[in-house]
Image 1 (cartoon, rainbow, N blue to C red):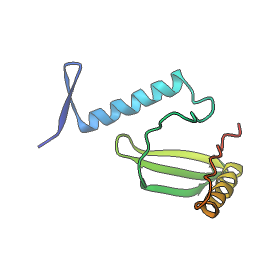
Image 2 (tube, helix red, strand yellow):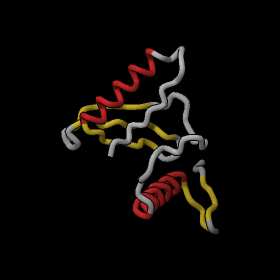
Image 3 (spheres, rainbow, N blue to C red):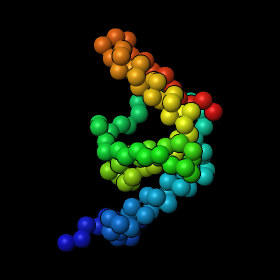
Image 4 (cartoon, helix red, strand yellow):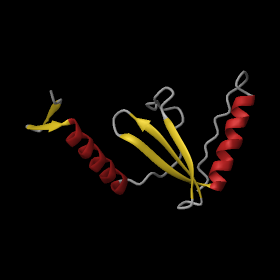
Length: 110
């Protein structure tokens, strides 16, 4: 049995729905590029302990970091080495201080 959903009077398969989500995501990225700082104080949807993958990539002269989203699949981010180093230092500080006050530092340096 194939799962389907109804959208605007059309029946979509799961694969068609995934493709639509990918296209809508690209439309949103083009319409409103990610700018600005993290929305401190506002709720953000978060997955608990998602699957992830990381590997060095010469394309970004850094690292590919990907997270598995149940709704859109693997979402990859290419991070240059300075950002990777900044994140590593932040994670180390957060680990060392996990019993104390949290260290909420944003990594947006550009």
